[in-house]
Image (cartoon, rainbow, N blue to C red):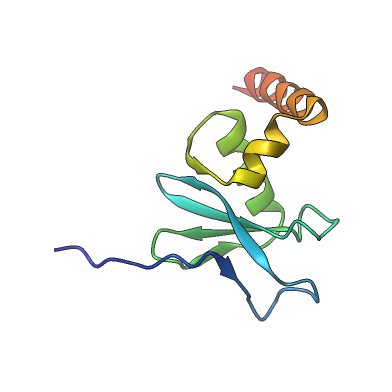
Length: 106
């Protein structure tokens, strides 16, 4: 029987900044992304864990993974905040631009 893991609603990690409260934003089949909505630097505002809650990335690579999950629609869960953000025209344009660039590289 597989071990059940309780995934916290928010996480505080010692390496995070003063505004270190991160909220579960996006889940994929393999990863869970937490975002700090108060952090202005996207590289510092996103962290990525695997399903065992091992920290995978707390820098640029977490941010890119988050965009890949959203742009490729590989998510299994979106938080209410992310759903609201994705409805904004500016965000829809950014995603469309990312998808176009992603298609050009694949």
